[in-house]
Image (cartoon, rainbow, N blue to C red; front, side, top):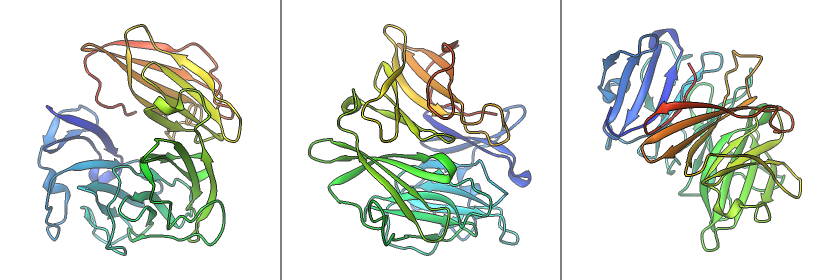
Length: 313
């Protein structure tokens, strides 16, 4: 699996597979044995879809209620809407034509929600939502902390993720100064709610942060530099140090454990992957889901080579 980039999983019965996405497309594996079933990325798409470029970028396969899968390929959005009779392959999402989708998808896991996921249009600096039937819209908020349909073009997209109670969280930076901001919005209903727009410039080491994860059961975020992870509770004046990795190790990814089927640990574990030469390591830290404070020392897992991505089974 040379040039592998990230993993995704589909628990839906007709496509119960593990996917490993690479520069060339995707490897399709049996979810139980991890044996390869196919390596044809284009077979995932409807025959009516012609891919201008194979460039898989971000996919969310943790389907809530069996509604919609979302994929970003070459900055365009594709969906499989299982409510649509007979739809089992990705089709080009419709509803908004003029957009460039950032390679990130934030799921909205609220039963009865008007939307299944949120994305960001870097061409027009606005949010895009995917409805439960697979159509996309660019919602405009009429009030609140900011306009979800027109964010300052001086700010550039960094990352996006799922927050508490279906919130969508996004980190942006000013293009000239690198000054960081956190935007939080709710797209659970048809009308969006712009919650907060926070300047994060005063937080310790935020200026050199590279990786981010958001609390799905509490109002806080994690951010990581090359060697440290910090936790910041929304609205507080300072961040606290969450953990420091071993000497010579470099953090290459942090990931929140979000498994709605696991009532005990869903939203309560942070995984941190590091690299030291060709040696990879994973730290598992259980934390308080409301405050983001670690409840025990990190558990270390070794014996890996270069770690590309982490996903729960």
